Image 1 (tube, one colour):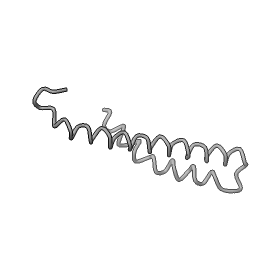
Image 2 (cartoon, one colour):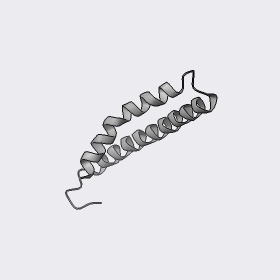
Image 3 (tube, rainbow, N blue to C red):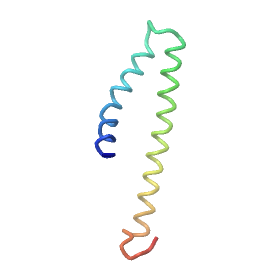
Image 4 (cartoon, rainbow, N blue to C red):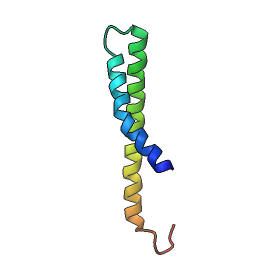
Length: 72
């Protein structure tokens, strides 16, 4: 149940980004453009943080092995 929902959200993410990019363009008001720009920047920072954490976790998992020997 969670897997299909996650897949649907992932597929919709690009449309969301496209919408935000459109909102940043004239003739939208300054407030709308600012809000879209802020959202893009905030999501970009979060995405970068998540990617860095994923890399670090993968590196740690490689260092400790696959965990099948009972080690935590």
